Length: 71
Picture 1 (cartoon, rainbow, N blue to C red):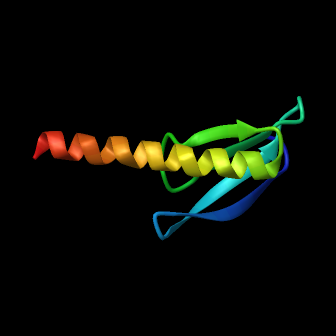
Picture 2: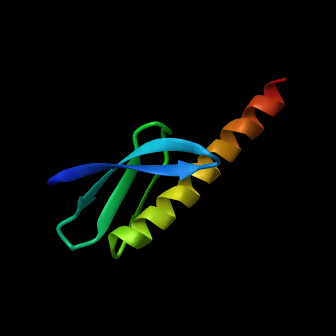
């Protein structure tokens, strides 16, 4: 990934580190460093931030469902 930045986003009162970078087509790619599998993109940083928050929520929801199944 080209030049990247790490920002913090809050989801469910918890902060997560998110790496952002602009891809060769100009889109902002976002990857959560704390939640494996949470990644997305957006036309700009605002959209990518909104999308990564949703992605983090969804991945955490799936993790909780999997834990419940095993219990």
